[in-house]
Each structure stands twice: as structure tokens, then as C-alpha cells.
Image 1 (cartoon, one colour):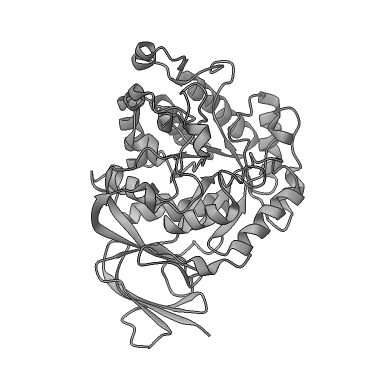
Image 2: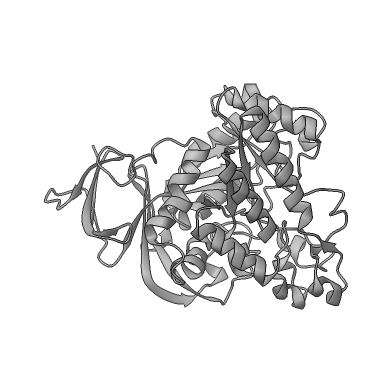
Length: 433
């Protein structure tokens, strides 16, 4: 039997209490007098349920130069996460039971977070034939989320069939909304800045139109739809309309789309090149408002690691994406908490309980209560300092936030009763394979 007591934490930013953990389960919350194998002094810290990311690229198999399941798991723990959903666009693609079980087993071996594989919607992400959805759903990995992220399921008939299929077992299709015909060769958001910079524009309607089509398809077959990385004001309006209509749709936004705009592209730094692209400041405000009023359900990182060579090049040749697991909570603190859009209780909903519900991750139904799994993140809300790239523990460092002053710091991450982060530092000894 192993035991842990967290003393004096502010639960969800509210009242302070002790949390008593035995063998990975919370056995008491309140004034705890019992002694434990380890005690954490959490005075001044906020206790959140362990964070859950619905959108992570771990790159393995095939992209180990940029990230591995082990290195990505360590990065997730450093950012306060206790569960991540690994996207299917690996090489080979995670489109069979064998592949998703491989990812799942390697996540278990790493031991830092729960790694939940996302299965591909179509074979090899080619958009032509459905992948082995049923086999992945009934595999040891128990896949519930399916996505061709990185590519859009553009064929309407195929998308409808996928939605019909997952509705039979309560799964969800997570769509990368990007009309390929409207974005062929696109480099950044279409607008005045793209015209000034001479970069081919990426129209907002390419996102909005796909989402409009998909919510209607989901309604027609009674299926669940999740919209990945919403980036436009129009997309927020479509999702808002669909929810008012009673359609079973959820949506996510990334931390970087809540902070950055196409104005950041003026220096041509490939660190700002992402998919979907950074939009206008008006879009940023619409995204924040969408989070505040509940239209957007989830904050997801879209953690997209790339090797130095894939970003240290010209804008046109650079890969899309930035790493996001380790900066996510600080960015949410800066863009949503500090301006008063959400409370810390809202942060727990956006970054933990709702993504866990969408992905059917067990153990987050009643977090930080007696009887629940001890997945806990302790945050220092008073911290304000320069966010250093040297803090990154993943394999890739493609982030534009180095040197930016950001609030908040993850001081401890507890995964099923075991500390993966202590005093802001990752515990390397956890590695078991």
C-alpha cells in the first residue's frame, strides 16, 4: 500500500482542503490527519483534475525524429496532463487494431500518462475507403475517437457512412474541417495580411462550409461529431447554430488560436505556420467568446512536434504545426482566466472533464472526490515569468512562445497516485521501457 497526502490545496480555485490518496485512489478530501508515505505542501496552489488532451500528435511510429510516445508522454506530464489522445496520422497510419494496440501498449510502458489512440477514419488517410473502425473499437485499445486529422474527410458519402458506423457503439468522428479544393497551396489566412506578404490565402469559408455540412450529416444519422481546432468566427456561429438545433456536436479550440493572429506572420517565422492558420484578431475574439458562452467545449493542444530542419527553412517549405502540451495551461491562464472569461472550475471543465467525457476516458466523472482516481494537477497561479524553450522535455522545440512572459506553472502532476512531476520537474525514473 502506498499513500500520499496533498495538504492545503485550493480545490478548483475555491476552498482549501487536503487530499488523501491510497494506492492511486482518493480516499479522503478535507482535513486529513493521517500520515502518508509522501506529503506535498500545496499551500497557494490550485488543485485541478489531471488534464486530458483530445488532440495530440505523438508521431510514433514513423516520426520518432520529432517525437516518440515516451517523449510525448513526458511532455504531457510536464504540462499537467494525465491522459492524451494520440492522432492517427503516423507512418504507418493507425488504421488497424494492431496499430492502435501498439500505440496503447507503448503508452502503458512509458507510464507517464494514459495514451488513448485515435483511429483513422479512412484507410491510410486516403479518403477513399473506411478503415477497420469496428476492429479498432473492439480492440484492447478500446478506440472511441476516429479522425483523419491532418486531412479532411471530404467525401460526403464516406463521412456519412463513418458517422453511421460509430453511432452504433457510441463513438465519435473528429473532423479536420478543411475543404481541400479551397485550400490547395494555401500558406496562411486569406486576408489583408496575406495580400501584403504575398502568401497564398486560406479562406475561412473552407473551414466553415465543411462544419456546416458535417453537422447536418450528423443530425441526419443521429451521430456524434467533434470539430477539431475551430479557428474562425464563422465556424463558431455554425457550431452555435447546430447546438441550438439540438445536434450532438462538440468543438475544440487550441491555445495558440486563442492568443495569436495572422499579424504574427509578418516576420515570416515558420514557428507561426500552423494548420488551420492563425486567423484575424476578430476571429480570436470570437473564439474566446465561444469558449466563454459554452459554444466551444474543449481546449485541445494540437501538439505538433517537428524536427529543427522542418522549421528552420523558408516559410513555403516549412511544416505546419507547433508543440503545445507544455505551454497549454499557461496560455489558457493568460487568454481566458486572467481576462475573466472562465474560472478555474471552467478550466477543469475545458481541459479535463469534458474532453474525458467526449473521449470516454474513465476516472474523470467525479474528479477530486473520494473514490475517484488520483489524477491531479497542482498549479501555481501566482507565477509570472519568462516561458523558456529550455523547459521543454519533448524531442521538438518548435514553439513561438520562447521568451514570452506567461502566468502559471505546473508544480506537480499526479497520475493514478504517482507523481510524474515534482516541484515543476519531470520524474525521469518512471520510465519502464
